[in-house]
Image (tube, rainbow, N blue to C red):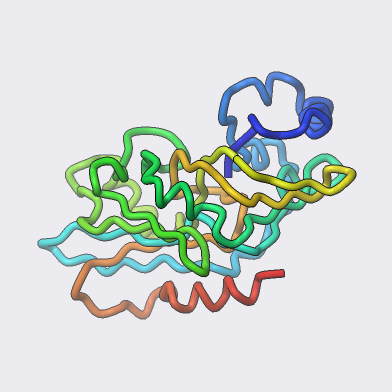
Amino acid sequence: MRDLRNLPDHVLDRLADAFGVEALAEPLAGFDAIVVDRGVQKRVEERARTVELRAADDQYPKLEGYALIYDTSYDVFGGPPIGWREMIAAGAAKKSVAERDDVRLLVNHAGIPLARTASNTLRLESDDVGLFVGTPDGIDMRSPDVQSLVVAMERGDIDQMSFAFRATRQEWNDDFTERVIREVQLFDVSVVTFPANPATVAQLRAADTPPSRRGMSLDLARHIAANLRI
């Protein structure tokens, strides 16, 4: 979850006092990385652990998941008093998806894209759960980056997502400790090591193969996400 550009001055001053100005200098600096590196965010129980690999030898595995879950609240920068409590309102990504913003699929918001909306290798959908991410043609196993990701996901070491965005419509409470994001412009969706929102999910599958008994399905993840909503 990344966007330091559209924060109120009051919030930026608060973060600068806590972390130093240099931590906020890079455009699109990552909430995920800063939260973890600084040790501020409380560890959250992984209630949406959902990786399962159903790959066939003659097919590229397909990555599916939710890069954001609507109407669930989570702490950014550890929550108040330094950070804030945040929620992405239902439909916030709908406009960006409809306008086909050029979005990449990355790992930890960096590196060579694994898929991209402009090349029709990445499919995004804003539904009643959140921002669904799919790779209809699979992710190309010829890429060393994909090979490393598949191994990590097979092991269950990576199974959640995040997204890079610019908030185009947002609301704050009076003391800037609660934020509701009403609309976003999307830049990337990423499989991540440390998500800002623990309700996000990612999984690998192959078409026309039965579900494995390992992990849980996206249907179950949807149910869990619904129970996490405020």
